[in-house]
Image (cartoon, rainbow, N blue to C red; front, side):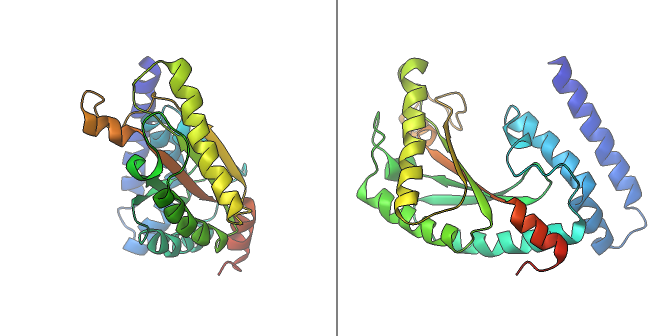
Length: 230
């Protein structure tokens, strides 16, 4: 708790410094500052707080700061893919900030479409949705994919953790069968990261989910830094 309070204080201090620095800048200048090193630090910190560290490690850590111009090119690329993914049925697409301070995409597939209770095999509807998702991913080969499976709190961790891993693996295997060659990491979180109250049937349904994170890979970052990303 003490560490969390310290991190929050640091983040707030960083925000105040950024606002002070931006006082005499144009809107474009402010956006550049927030999208470069400052945005990277705040984005990773907020991600760490919200996801118990998860947000601070998603993305191809390159060890150096990504320039604002490169970040803008990658953001534009992600915006284009987001527009494609928003057409998917039974899925929600959101933006997040990866470890490099770059825009990434988080796609959450509804459990009712992907899995029955206690199962990890994909339904016909799930395969249709994932086929459409795979088409978008194949059209964007310069991205890395993290698949994370989740369960509700029915049963013990001994059951839920392997089940969540199997769900993530099912999605990964199907994407591979559809020709996806991007780097993919599949993992499971069991019931440890609920997004709704497990006390209700509706809440349990929301918690039985798969989340897919899409981030710029090292090659995309290099191309963006070189100004050749299209």
